[in-house]
Image (cartoon, rainbow over all chains, first blue to last red; front, top):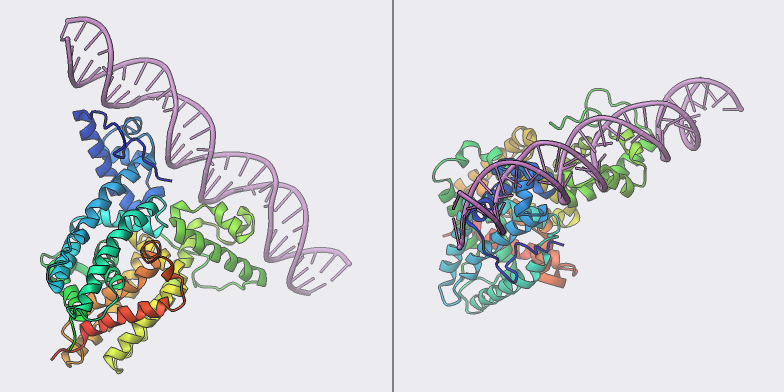
Length: 217
Length: 217
DNA sequence: CTGCATTTTGACCAACTAGTCAAGTTTTTG
DNA sequence: CAAAAACTTGACTAGTTGGTCAAAATGCAG
């Protein structure tokens, strides 16, 4: 499931024209919006086509299957999503590195909420299109960084904590603000939109997690 | 959207027969399974009927609309889901109360993962069926408990922390294990099924959060 | 400006799906 | 045990939706 023959970086790139570039982008942007809101099944090709400002057959000229659009979006998102984790420097100061990581994740959650929801929805439904990616790309990267964190713990630079659960906690907490936005808004009301809300969030999250993993006498 | 005329506790209860009780339960159990896996749009009435072991018209005899099943499930889930929060004792020991709350939430996430995913999916898609519930029931309860936590902070029994963000962090972290189960399994592999995994999870989560909010000298 | 390649779309179709209906079967009740 | 009430279902319908197709419009290289 989820093989994107035409769109993946397979074999011959086939020259892309100017029009192709523009229209693919229009479609992908419209589709991200729709998929992240209504899910894969809940989104119709007509919806995407209308948002993208073109006819359905025209859209299908660029992406012959609905699945293709979806998979392309996930592929585009995943690399970007993982970059901050990869950037954790094993030789840096542990608390500082994790502070940077958490801050970046919260920032991404605010600037790309649709991407976060697209991914959340996919995983929530069993990751049919990306389960392979999870084991072949995500797991190795997490294993690598978990080893770094474990070393930091061994060196007494962090309180004894399971690195995997720490990473999950960071993911869960930061993505929560994008994925459960409606709930956050229902509870915190107008505060959410206000400038400085992200800083306040970052401050609270950092305060709890960083104090929670600081080495203890 | 989402008025469940026949199934809500509205007006006359109308005597329910033995058969009704059995079949409604069969339907709801089958539907929870399906909705939590495939989402509302991704689930067909035929699917639910087959899982429940009855014909589609028969299912529709008990729940005239697909929406009714969905809303009934959400209503059933929400009350149960909120109970642990309501149980936080304002007169208890802060750390102990929060330990109990987190432990209970992790336990629920493991024992009712489908319910957690049903709810996550609903909120992720903008909570069309329960946005009213969020503001009329959830918000007041959270406000109440947030006030308690704020008082604890004021009394120096907890480190200065925003109560709302603390609650969000607890929700996000505990529900993560149900909602992102596939991802957790892809990364932690066989460990997840093993006995004692829940205890290990609880230990890690409690360690970070409780140390993160312990009053600091 | 001409001929070929690319792009665009109206009209259409087959598959699917929520919900209906009338006619049967089973259960309950007096 | 007979009549009424409750339950069950095969066959059907109307609406939706992913995808096709052939023909028209547009862009572009020489």
